[in-house]
Length: 239
Image: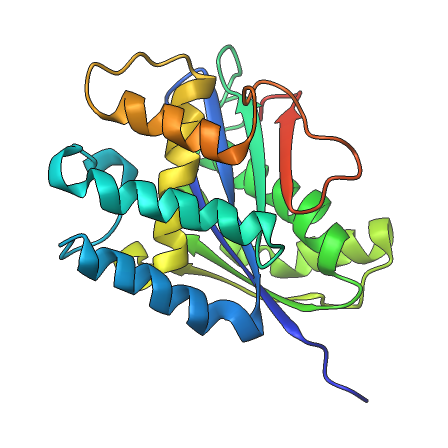
């Protein structure tokens, strides 16, 4: 039997303590991963960034050009269909994250990852690709990293994917994975705009730049049902 081509989804989450939490990331075919990682490494080096691209650490200044180059590159990949950006926006304001004993906002983020992986990654790619998932390490992905079997079973019954379409779900340290860094910056910017955060720092300008580069008027609405390379989903139940 012919081995299925591989695809990896690199994801991150932002703003779990705000009104809207955003999770999302980039789906990349296995053959393109090294090319993209190399280009992100080049952008870091040219920008004099010794550690990593990181939304929370952005201060503008001499790093502005490097971050904007990363954003432009991200959406060039999407527009050229070399990668796909999938985003879920969940209203966390007013949701009881502790309705079940032992649960919290991290648990709610894990649930949103499950929804995103099921209704976007598995649904879109599970019939033709062997999927791997790499999420920025933390408590907000600890549960989903242990739920591969449940995710695969649900995908198989819901969307007629290949059995065990998701081969692995693992946490990764963002400083080691450039595509996770790219997801961090884009998702952080989307979350800032979705929460109406008014930054007096350069973050506000970067959030505006991300929105312009995406071609979106705002992040407040869903993309069309037939969208595949840039999808935005306003999840209605909150958690």
